[in-house]
Amino acid sequence: MFRWIIALLILVPAVEITLLIMLGHLVGGWMTFLFIIASGFLGAYFAKREGRKVMEYAKFEWSQGQLPAQQILDGICIFLGGILLITPGFITDILGFLLVFPYTRPIFKVLLLAIIRKQIGKGNMHIIRRR
Picture: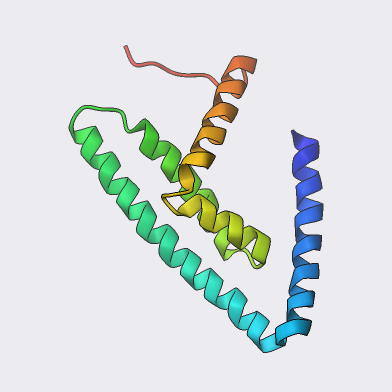
């Protein structure tokens, strides 16, 4: 897992810089700069809006005596998406928007749940139950 993270930390910025340079040649440096700034602000707006919706629904479920498990997964996806959206670059923006938008988020929730279950199975995560 650590090797994948290191590889991504090297490859993603290299690809992002290449794309930014290519786009700069196509549309100009200032337009590229404006795209980056606009995607950051739009991403922050959408992440904040979706985060509030999820938090309100989680509070509602909690008040009904239910554990808001799906909202916790939604919150993790929105948080990760928000981080990716404020990071300059187009690949990170696309992935960030996919994590934030409610129509594409279920795909990532399934992947996230699979990762959590795998980590629990390996003994790397533990579930603490109330008595």
